[in-house]
Image (cartoon, rainbow, N blue to C red; front, side, top):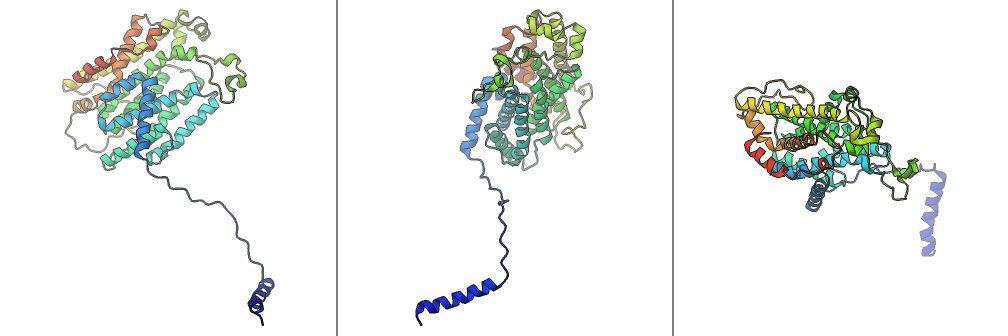
Length: 390
């Protein structure tokens, strides 16, 4: 028998057995559910993200860029990333062609928060620097200091109102918006120091409300007369949405109760600008509320220097992130805590300067000078920081 036949015989026998047996069940095909393990952030990625955030602030938020030098070096990267996030959120209405796309961008940032806090951020410069700074904070404090996920999410959620320019029903609604944005920015920066102090949070709350109210006033001309819609890469954009010439509908973002009291009509503002009847009176009343918050802070600091308490309760104590039940082992007095965190409060200086300029121009918020950065801010902030005064 040939070697070929000897080799073929067992193969034929084996084939017969396979044919006579039950057919084998075919294996089901499915996608793998395992996730690729993302490598840690590289030094080059973090350095590139840092440059990006600095450039973003330098272009769109010059005061925050200038005041970054007053933040302690170990918390500065977090401050820059957080303020860059605020700029990115504020630019969404201008850089998207519809509120729907804007909502998608906000959802991206909501989804990114958990990844950022876990040290696994999306490949986006602001997210990378923010995640890196939070990781450094955890290492520096051995995991004791935490950045509030709720506050980051609240900062993002608050920006949803600006997508459609929903009006503030009253001054309290405007203050609530300022609390959810600019006060929250300060709370988060205090956490990065780290600083857990009811007095520091109380000061931050009032300053943030003043800064937020002034920011809405400062942006009123830009919202009333917005720039054309951005064009899509395919040449569509606003024209595809039926808006002729890329025009966007303006809005007057003042509290409705104050507009009614001053006799301001939105259509008159959109038609006549600064000459609209009652507009300056309405701006004056809103600006007065911002000024009142700064005056309150001045009184609080004065009371602390005299060895008294701040003079009134913190209205947000007991809310998320404002629990102070744990006994403090620090020997710092409330005044010491405020002085140690004073760099975080520097936006009050820029806001005071802007409100003074607004008053000089008789509350004509449409004056082009009010849209420019104040050249006095660096040295005014320097002296305020040294003297610990607002």
